[in-house]
Image (cartoon, rainbow, N blue to C red):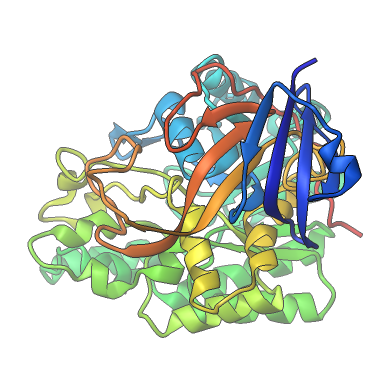
Length: 466
Protein backbone atom coordinates (compact mmCIF):
# COMPACT_ATOMS: atom_id res chain seq x y z
CA UNK A 1 0.00 0.00 0.00
CA UNK A 2 1.46 3.37 -1.04
CA UNK A 3 0.66 6.33 1.20
CA UNK A 4 1.10 10.07 0.75
CA UNK A 5 0.32 12.82 3.25
CA UNK A 6 -0.25 16.44 2.23
CA UNK A 7 0.27 18.68 5.26
CA UNK A 8 -0.56 22.23 6.20
CA UNK A 9 -2.52 23.46 3.19
CA UNK A 10 -5.90 25.14 2.82
CA UNK A 11 -8.15 22.49 1.28
CA UNK A 12 -10.69 24.11 -1.05
CA UNK A 13 -13.65 22.24 -2.55
CA UNK A 14 -16.87 23.52 -4.10
CA UNK A 15 -18.52 23.44 -0.66
CA UNK A 16 -15.78 23.95 1.96
CA UNK A 17 -12.50 25.60 2.85
CA UNK A 18 -10.56 24.08 5.74
CA UNK A 19 -6.99 23.89 6.96
CA UNK A 20 -6.54 20.15 6.77
CA UNK A 21 -4.03 17.41 6.12
CA UNK A 22 -4.92 14.89 3.43
CA UNK A 23 -4.08 11.18 3.57
CA UNK A 24 -3.83 9.31 0.26
CA UNK A 25 -3.73 5.51 0.08
CA UNK A 26 -3.47 3.50 -3.15
CA UNK A 27 -4.52 6.34 -5.41
CA UNK A 28 -7.58 7.40 -3.40
CA UNK A 29 -8.26 10.01 -0.75
CA UNK A 30 -8.35 8.01 2.49
CA UNK A 31 -9.00 10.73 5.08
CA UNK A 32 -8.88 14.42 5.94
CA UNK A 33 -8.07 15.75 9.41
CA UNK A 34 -7.60 19.26 10.74
CA UNK A 35 -3.93 20.23 10.55
CA UNK A 36 -2.08 19.90 13.84
CA UNK A 37 -4.59 17.52 15.42
CA UNK A 38 -3.54 14.25 17.02
CA UNK A 39 -5.31 12.28 14.28
CA UNK A 40 -3.40 14.04 11.50
CA UNK A 41 -0.06 13.93 13.33
CA UNK A 42 -0.37 10.14 13.70
CA UNK A 43 -0.38 9.55 9.94
CA UNK A 44 2.78 8.07 8.45
CA UNK A 45 3.56 7.80 4.75
CA UNK A 46 6.34 7.17 2.25
CA UNK A 47 5.78 10.61 0.75
CA UNK A 48 5.00 13.84 2.61
CA UNK A 49 4.14 17.02 0.72
CA UNK A 50 4.37 20.33 2.58
CA UNK A 51 1.53 22.57 1.42
CA UNK A 52 1.98 25.30 4.05
CA UNK A 53 0.77 28.61 2.64
CA UNK A 54 -0.68 26.86 -0.42
CA UNK A 55 -4.09 25.71 -1.58
CA UNK A 56 -4.90 22.02 -1.87
CA UNK A 57 -7.55 21.70 -4.58
CA UNK A 58 -9.10 18.92 -6.67
CA UNK A 59 -7.58 18.37 -10.10
CA UNK A 60 -9.42 20.33 -12.76
CA UNK A 61 -11.97 18.62 -15.01
CA UNK A 62 -11.93 20.04 -18.55
CA UNK A 63 -15.07 18.67 -20.16
CA UNK A 64 -14.45 20.07 -23.65
CA UNK A 65 -11.22 19.32 -25.54
CA UNK A 66 -10.37 18.37 -29.11
CA UNK A 67 -7.04 16.53 -29.29
CA UNK A 68 -5.91 15.45 -32.78
CA UNK A 69 -9.17 16.71 -34.25
CA UNK A 70 -9.43 16.93 -38.05
CA UNK A 71 -10.72 20.32 -39.21
CA UNK A 72 -10.59 22.16 -42.52
CA UNK A 73 -7.93 19.95 -44.09
CA UNK A 74 -5.61 19.91 -41.09
CA UNK A 75 -5.47 18.54 -37.53
CA UNK A 76 -5.46 20.06 -34.05
CA UNK A 77 -1.80 20.43 -33.10
CA UNK A 78 -1.97 18.67 -29.72
CA UNK A 79 -1.88 14.90 -29.56
CA UNK A 80 -3.37 13.11 -26.58
CA UNK A 81 0.18 12.86 -25.23
CA UNK A 82 1.13 16.54 -25.56
CA UNK A 83 -2.35 17.79 -24.72
CA UNK A 84 -2.77 15.82 -21.50
CA UNK A 85 0.75 16.70 -20.39
CA UNK A 86 -0.07 20.39 -20.90
CA UNK A 87 -3.35 19.85 -19.02
CA UNK A 88 -1.39 18.49 -16.06
CA UNK A 89 0.93 21.51 -16.09
CA UNK A 90 -2.20 23.64 -15.76
CA UNK A 91 -3.68 21.64 -12.89
CA UNK A 92 -6.23 19.69 -14.95
CA UNK A 93 -6.26 15.95 -14.22
CA UNK A 94 -9.26 14.81 -16.30
CA UNK A 95 -10.31 15.73 -19.82
CA UNK A 96 -13.39 14.70 -21.75
CA UNK A 97 -12.60 14.74 -25.46
CA UNK A 98 -14.89 14.39 -28.47
CA UNK A 99 -14.93 11.26 -30.60
CA UNK A 100 -16.32 12.00 -34.06
CA UNK A 101 -18.78 10.00 -36.12
CA UNK A 102 -18.09 10.42 -39.84
CA UNK A 103 -21.14 10.93 -42.03
CA UNK A 104 -22.10 7.49 -43.32
CA UNK A 105 -20.11 5.77 -40.58
CA UNK A 106 -21.13 4.20 -37.29
CA UNK A 107 -20.77 5.85 -33.89
CA UNK A 108 -18.74 2.79 -32.88
CA UNK A 109 -16.17 3.39 -35.63
CA UNK A 110 -15.62 6.95 -34.46
CA UNK A 111 -15.38 5.94 -30.82
CA UNK A 112 -12.92 3.12 -31.59
CA UNK A 113 -10.75 5.53 -33.58
CA UNK A 114 -10.54 7.94 -30.63
CA UNK A 115 -9.81 5.13 -28.18
CA UNK A 116 -6.91 4.14 -30.44
CA UNK A 117 -5.55 7.71 -30.46
CA UNK A 118 -5.71 8.07 -26.68
CA UNK A 119 -4.91 4.65 -25.25
CA UNK A 120 -1.44 4.43 -23.73
CA UNK A 121 -0.67 8.07 -24.56
CA UNK A 122 -2.34 10.14 -21.84
CA UNK A 123 -0.63 11.67 -18.82
CA UNK A 124 -3.96 12.17 -17.03
CA UNK A 125 -7.35 10.45 -17.09
CA UNK A 126 -9.77 10.93 -19.94
CA UNK A 127 -13.31 10.20 -21.11
CA UNK A 128 -15.21 10.73 -24.33
CA UNK A 129 -18.29 12.48 -25.61
CA UNK A 130 -19.64 11.40 -29.01
CA UNK A 131 -20.15 13.84 -31.87
CA UNK A 132 -23.23 12.68 -33.79
CA UNK A 133 -22.90 13.87 -37.40
CA UNK A 134 -25.40 11.51 -39.03
CA UNK A 135 -28.69 10.75 -37.27
CA UNK A 136 -30.43 7.62 -38.57
CA UNK A 137 -32.07 4.51 -37.10
CA UNK A 138 -28.72 2.74 -36.62
CA UNK A 139 -27.18 5.79 -34.93
CA UNK A 140 -30.10 6.10 -32.54
CA UNK A 141 -29.77 2.45 -31.48
CA UNK A 142 -26.01 2.91 -31.01
CA UNK A 143 -26.66 5.83 -28.66
CA UNK A 144 -28.35 3.41 -26.24
CA UNK A 145 -25.34 1.08 -26.31
CA UNK A 146 -22.85 3.91 -25.78
CA UNK A 147 -24.74 5.19 -22.72
CA UNK A 148 -24.57 1.71 -21.22
CA UNK A 149 -20.79 1.61 -21.60
CA UNK A 150 -20.10 5.05 -20.17
CA UNK A 151 -20.23 7.44 -23.13
CA UNK A 152 -23.26 9.34 -21.86
CA UNK A 153 -23.19 12.62 -23.80
CA UNK A 154 -23.71 13.39 -27.47
CA UNK A 155 -22.81 16.57 -29.29
CA UNK A 156 -24.72 18.00 -32.20
CA UNK A 157 -24.09 21.02 -34.37
CA UNK A 158 -26.49 23.64 -35.63
CA UNK A 159 -23.41 25.08 -37.38
CA UNK A 160 -21.03 23.85 -40.13
CA UNK A 161 -23.43 22.80 -42.90
CA UNK A 162 -21.94 19.98 -44.95
CA UNK A 163 -19.63 18.89 -42.13
CA UNK A 164 -21.22 18.30 -38.71
CA UNK A 165 -24.56 20.06 -39.24
CA UNK A 166 -27.82 18.46 -38.08
CA UNK A 167 -31.21 19.85 -39.07
CA UNK A 168 -34.00 20.36 -36.54
CA UNK A 169 -35.56 16.99 -37.31
CA UNK A 170 -32.31 15.13 -36.71
CA UNK A 171 -31.74 17.09 -33.52
CA UNK A 172 -35.24 16.30 -32.29
CA UNK A 173 -34.78 12.56 -32.95
CA UNK A 174 -31.48 12.46 -31.05
CA UNK A 175 -32.99 14.44 -28.17
CA UNK A 176 -35.94 12.05 -27.97
CA UNK A 177 -33.51 9.14 -27.79
CA UNK A 178 -31.50 10.88 -25.06
CA UNK A 179 -34.73 11.47 -23.12
CA UNK A 180 -35.23 7.70 -23.14
CA UNK A 181 -31.68 6.47 -22.50
CA UNK A 182 -30.50 9.08 -19.98
CA UNK A 183 -27.95 10.70 -22.28
CA UNK A 184 -27.19 14.42 -22.39
CA UNK A 185 -27.30 16.33 -25.68
CA UNK A 186 -24.57 18.95 -26.02
CA UNK A 187 -25.31 21.63 -28.58
CA UNK A 188 -23.14 23.92 -30.68
CA UNK A 189 -25.82 26.58 -30.99
CA UNK A 190 -25.26 28.86 -33.98
CA UNK A 191 -27.48 29.21 -37.04
CA UNK A 192 -25.01 27.80 -39.54
CA UNK A 193 -27.33 28.10 -42.55
CA UNK A 194 -27.75 31.85 -42.04
CA UNK A 195 -24.07 32.31 -41.16
CA UNK A 196 -23.02 30.72 -44.45
CA UNK A 197 -25.07 33.32 -46.33
CA UNK A 198 -23.37 36.13 -44.40
CA UNK A 199 -19.93 34.60 -45.02
CA UNK A 200 -20.58 34.46 -48.77
CA UNK A 201 -21.79 38.08 -48.80
CA UNK A 202 -18.81 39.33 -46.77
CA UNK A 203 -16.28 37.62 -49.03
CA UNK A 204 -18.07 39.03 -52.11
CA UNK A 205 -17.57 42.51 -50.64
CA UNK A 206 -13.85 41.81 -50.21
CA UNK A 207 -14.11 41.53 -46.42
CA UNK A 208 -11.54 38.78 -45.95
CA UNK A 209 -9.67 39.65 -42.74
CA UNK A 210 -10.02 37.57 -39.53
CA UNK A 211 -12.18 40.20 -37.84
CA UNK A 212 -15.01 39.45 -40.26
CA UNK A 213 -15.23 35.94 -38.82
CA UNK A 214 -16.69 37.56 -35.70
CA UNK A 215 -18.91 39.95 -37.64
CA UNK A 216 -20.70 37.29 -39.71
CA UNK A 217 -21.22 34.89 -36.78
CA UNK A 218 -23.65 37.27 -35.15
CA UNK A 219 -24.60 37.13 -31.49
CA UNK A 220 -28.27 37.12 -32.52
CA UNK A 221 -27.69 33.92 -34.52
CA UNK A 222 -26.17 32.31 -31.42
CA UNK A 223 -29.18 33.47 -29.37
CA UNK A 224 -31.65 32.23 -32.00
CA UNK A 225 -30.03 28.79 -32.16
CA UNK A 226 -29.85 28.59 -28.36
CA UNK A 227 -33.56 29.41 -28.14
CA UNK A 228 -34.39 26.84 -30.83
CA UNK A 229 -32.30 24.13 -29.14
CA UNK A 230 -34.06 24.82 -25.83
CA UNK A 231 -37.50 24.52 -27.45
CA UNK A 232 -36.57 21.29 -29.28
CA UNK A 233 -35.28 19.84 -26.00
CA UNK A 234 -38.50 20.91 -24.31
CA UNK A 235 -40.57 19.13 -27.00
CA UNK A 236 -38.41 16.01 -26.61
CA UNK A 237 -38.47 16.12 -22.81
CA UNK A 238 -34.67 15.98 -22.86
CA UNK A 239 -31.94 17.80 -20.95
CA UNK A 240 -29.70 20.18 -22.90
CA UNK A 241 -26.13 21.40 -22.38
CA UNK A 242 -25.14 24.36 -24.58
CA UNK A 243 -21.39 24.47 -25.23
CA UNK A 244 -19.11 27.54 -25.49
CA UNK A 245 -21.71 30.22 -24.80
CA UNK A 246 -20.20 33.56 -25.82
CA UNK A 247 -23.01 36.10 -26.23
CA UNK A 248 -25.05 38.01 -23.65
CA UNK A 249 -28.20 37.30 -25.69
CA UNK A 250 -27.56 33.53 -25.48
CA UNK A 251 -27.05 33.74 -21.71
CA UNK A 252 -30.44 35.45 -21.49
CA UNK A 253 -32.07 32.51 -23.34
CA UNK A 254 -30.49 30.04 -20.90
CA UNK A 255 -31.52 32.10 -17.88
CA UNK A 256 -35.12 32.26 -19.12
CA UNK A 257 -35.25 28.49 -19.65
CA UNK A 258 -33.79 27.79 -16.21
CA UNK A 259 -36.27 30.20 -14.62
CA UNK A 260 -38.96 28.01 -16.20
CA UNK A 261 -37.45 24.99 -14.43
CA UNK A 262 -36.04 23.32 -17.54
CA UNK A 263 -33.00 21.04 -17.39
CA UNK A 264 -30.91 23.39 -19.50
CA UNK A 265 -27.23 24.01 -18.76
CA UNK A 266 -24.59 26.34 -20.15
CA UNK A 267 -20.83 26.29 -20.54
CA UNK A 268 -18.53 29.17 -21.33
CA UNK A 269 -14.78 29.27 -21.95
CA UNK A 270 -11.87 31.45 -20.78
CA UNK A 271 -11.48 33.03 -24.22
CA UNK A 272 -14.93 34.63 -23.94
CA UNK A 273 -14.20 35.85 -20.42
CA UNK A 274 -10.77 37.35 -21.12
CA UNK A 275 -10.55 38.05 -24.89
CA UNK A 276 -12.72 40.01 -27.32
CA UNK A 277 -13.19 41.19 -30.89
CA UNK A 278 -10.27 43.56 -30.23
CA UNK A 279 -8.07 40.46 -30.55
CA UNK A 280 -9.76 39.34 -33.78
CA UNK A 281 -9.03 42.80 -35.21
CA UNK A 282 -5.27 42.65 -34.51
CA UNK A 283 -3.34 43.74 -37.64
CA UNK A 284 -1.14 41.73 -40.02
CA UNK A 285 -3.39 38.65 -39.85
CA UNK A 286 -2.56 38.25 -36.12
CA UNK A 287 -6.31 38.16 -35.52
CA UNK A 288 -6.35 34.67 -37.08
CA UNK A 289 -4.90 33.35 -33.81
CA UNK A 290 -8.22 34.15 -32.15
CA UNK A 291 -10.59 32.60 -34.70
CA UNK A 292 -12.88 30.11 -32.98
CA UNK A 293 -16.60 29.35 -33.07
CA UNK A 294 -18.64 30.61 -31.38
CA UNK A 295 -16.50 33.70 -32.01
CA UNK A 296 -15.04 36.20 -29.59
CA UNK A 297 -17.52 38.98 -28.86
CA UNK A 298 -17.22 42.70 -28.12
CA UNK A 299 -15.89 43.29 -24.62
CA UNK A 300 -19.26 44.35 -23.19
CA UNK A 301 -20.48 40.72 -23.36
CA UNK A 302 -17.94 39.69 -20.71
CA UNK A 303 -19.87 41.23 -17.82
CA UNK A 304 -22.95 39.14 -18.66
CA UNK A 305 -20.86 35.95 -18.82
CA UNK A 306 -19.33 36.64 -15.39
CA UNK A 307 -22.79 37.44 -14.05
CA UNK A 308 -24.09 34.15 -15.50
CA UNK A 309 -21.32 32.27 -13.70
CA UNK A 310 -22.17 33.98 -10.41
CA UNK A 311 -25.93 33.37 -10.72
CA UNK A 312 -25.46 29.78 -11.96
CA UNK A 313 -27.14 30.44 -15.30
CA UNK A 314 -23.76 29.24 -16.61
CA UNK A 315 -22.42 26.28 -14.65
CA UNK A 316 -19.16 25.18 -16.26
CA UNK A 317 -15.99 26.72 -17.69
CA UNK A 318 -14.28 24.41 -20.19
CA UNK A 319 -11.64 25.31 -22.75
CA UNK A 320 -12.83 23.97 -26.13
CA UNK A 321 -9.07 23.38 -26.49
CA UNK A 322 -8.52 22.95 -30.23
CA UNK A 323 -5.07 24.34 -31.09
CA UNK A 324 -3.82 25.17 -34.57
CA UNK A 325 -0.39 26.66 -35.14
CA UNK A 326 -0.30 30.17 -36.59
CA UNK A 327 2.39 29.16 -39.08
CA UNK A 328 1.11 26.69 -41.63
CA UNK A 329 -2.35 26.15 -40.11
CA UNK A 330 -4.08 29.44 -39.23
CA UNK A 331 -2.33 30.82 -42.33
CA UNK A 332 -4.53 28.61 -44.53
CA UNK A 333 -7.06 31.42 -44.23
CA UNK A 334 -4.94 34.31 -45.52
CA UNK A 335 -7.19 36.15 -47.95
CA UNK A 336 -10.29 34.21 -46.85
CA UNK A 337 -11.26 34.21 -43.15
CA UNK A 338 -13.63 31.28 -43.72
CA UNK A 339 -10.64 29.00 -44.35
CA UNK A 340 -8.94 29.76 -41.00
CA UNK A 341 -9.10 26.60 -38.83
CA UNK A 342 -11.44 27.32 -35.91
CA UNK A 343 -9.98 26.84 -32.45
CA UNK A 344 -7.79 28.17 -29.65
CA UNK A 345 -5.25 26.57 -27.31
CA UNK A 346 -6.19 26.78 -23.63
CA UNK A 347 -6.13 23.47 -21.74
CA UNK A 348 -3.05 24.61 -19.80
CA UNK A 349 -4.41 28.06 -18.90
CA UNK A 350 -7.95 27.47 -17.62
CA UNK A 351 -7.38 26.89 -13.88
CA UNK A 352 -4.89 29.78 -13.67
CA UNK A 353 -7.18 32.19 -15.52
CA UNK A 354 -10.08 31.24 -13.26
CA UNK A 355 -7.89 31.81 -10.20
CA UNK A 356 -7.11 35.25 -11.62
CA UNK A 357 -10.89 35.77 -11.71
CA UNK A 358 -10.88 35.07 -7.96
CA UNK A 359 -8.08 37.61 -7.47
CA UNK A 360 -9.99 40.13 -9.61
CA UNK A 361 -13.19 39.64 -7.59
CA UNK A 362 -15.36 38.05 -10.29
CA UNK A 363 -15.92 34.78 -8.41
CA UNK A 364 -15.16 33.24 -5.00
CA UNK A 365 -12.55 30.55 -4.33
CA UNK A 366 -15.19 27.90 -3.90
CA UNK A 367 -16.94 28.95 -7.11
CA UNK A 368 -13.55 28.58 -8.86
CA UNK A 369 -13.49 24.94 -7.81
CA UNK A 370 -17.17 24.50 -8.55
CA UNK A 371 -17.05 25.66 -12.19
CA UNK A 372 -13.61 24.17 -12.88
CA UNK A 373 -13.77 20.81 -11.07
CA UNK A 374 -16.94 19.76 -9.27
CA UNK A 375 -19.73 20.80 -11.65
CA UNK A 376 -18.13 19.38 -14.80
CA UNK A 377 -17.57 16.13 -12.89
CA UNK A 378 -21.24 16.05 -11.84
CA UNK A 379 -22.53 17.19 -15.22
CA UNK A 380 -20.78 14.33 -16.95
CA UNK A 381 -21.23 11.55 -14.41
CA UNK A 382 -17.81 11.40 -12.71
CA UNK A 383 -18.54 12.82 -9.24
CA UNK A 384 -17.37 12.16 -6.49
CA UNK A 385 -14.65 10.03 -8.11
CA UNK A 386 -13.48 13.26 -9.78
CA UNK A 387 -13.95 16.91 -8.88
CA UNK A 388 -13.57 16.91 -5.10
CA UNK A 389 -11.27 16.07 -2.20
CA UNK A 390 -13.19 13.63 -0.01
CA UNK A 391 -12.67 10.10 1.29
CA UNK A 392 -13.08 7.64 -1.57
CA UNK A 393 -12.41 10.14 -4.34
CA UNK A 394 -9.55 9.61 -6.77
CA UNK A 395 -6.46 11.34 -5.42
CA UNK A 396 -6.38 13.92 -8.22
CA UNK A 397 -4.92 16.75 -6.17
CA UNK A 398 -3.22 20.03 -7.01
CA UNK A 399 -0.94 21.99 -4.67
CA UNK A 400 -1.58 25.55 -5.82
CA UNK A 401 0.52 28.58 -4.89
CA UNK A 402 -1.93 31.51 -4.79
CA UNK A 403 0.85 34.09 -4.47
CA UNK A 404 3.25 33.03 -7.24
CA UNK A 405 3.21 35.33 -10.24
CA UNK A 406 3.60 34.27 -13.84
CA UNK A 407 3.48 35.76 -17.32
CA UNK A 408 1.69 33.57 -19.86
CA UNK A 409 3.75 32.95 -22.98
CA UNK A 410 4.22 30.51 -25.83
CA UNK A 411 7.89 30.51 -24.79
CA UNK A 412 7.05 28.70 -21.56
CA UNK A 413 3.78 26.83 -22.16
CA UNK A 414 3.65 23.10 -22.85
CA UNK A 415 0.89 22.95 -25.45
CA UNK A 416 2.10 21.91 -28.91
CA UNK A 417 1.25 25.21 -30.56
CA UNK A 418 3.38 28.17 -31.64
CA UNK A 419 1.45 30.97 -29.93
CA UNK A 420 -0.46 31.71 -26.75
CA UNK A 421 -3.91 33.28 -26.83
CA UNK A 422 -2.93 35.05 -23.59
CA UNK A 423 0.63 36.10 -24.52
CA UNK A 424 2.07 38.53 -21.98
CA UNK A 425 -0.85 38.31 -19.54
CA UNK A 426 0.23 38.58 -15.90
CA UNK A 427 -1.45 36.09 -13.58
CA UNK A 428 -1.33 35.62 -9.83
CA UNK A 429 -1.36 31.96 -8.84
CA UNK A 430 0.40 28.92 -10.23
CA UNK A 431 0.33 25.14 -10.07
CA UNK A 432 3.19 23.70 -8.03
CA UNK A 433 2.53 19.96 -7.70
CA UNK A 434 -0.07 17.71 -9.33
CA UNK A 435 -1.10 14.21 -8.33
CA UNK A 436 -3.16 12.00 -10.62
CA UNK A 437 -4.65 9.06 -8.72
CA UNK A 438 -1.93 9.64 -6.11
CA UNK A 439 0.95 9.61 -8.59
CA UNK A 440 3.00 12.81 -9.00
CA UNK A 441 2.66 14.16 -12.54
CA UNK A 442 4.09 17.60 -11.77
CA UNK A 443 6.50 17.77 -8.81
CA UNK A 444 7.46 21.27 -7.69
CA UNK A 445 7.23 22.60 -11.27
CA UNK A 446 8.91 19.60 -12.90
CA UNK A 447 7.13 17.07 -15.09
CA UNK A 448 7.38 13.65 -13.46
CA UNK A 449 4.46 11.97 -15.21
CA UNK A 450 4.40 9.58 -18.12
CA UNK A 451 2.35 8.79 -21.19
CA UNK A 452 0.08 5.89 -20.37
CA UNK A 453 -0.53 6.77 -16.71
CA UNK A 454 -3.87 8.32 -17.67
CA UNK A 455 -6.69 5.81 -18.03
CA UNK A 456 -10.04 5.84 -19.77
CA UNK A 457 -12.86 6.80 -17.40
CA UNK A 458 -16.37 5.52 -18.21
CA UNK A 459 -19.05 7.92 -17.00
CA UNK A 460 -22.51 7.63 -15.49
CA UNK A 461 -25.31 9.91 -16.67
CA UNK A 462 -25.67 13.59 -15.78
CA UNK A 463 -26.05 13.96 -12.02
CA UNK A 464 -28.18 17.12 -12.18
CA UNK A 465 -31.30 15.63 -13.73
CA UNK A 466 -34.60 15.61 -11.89
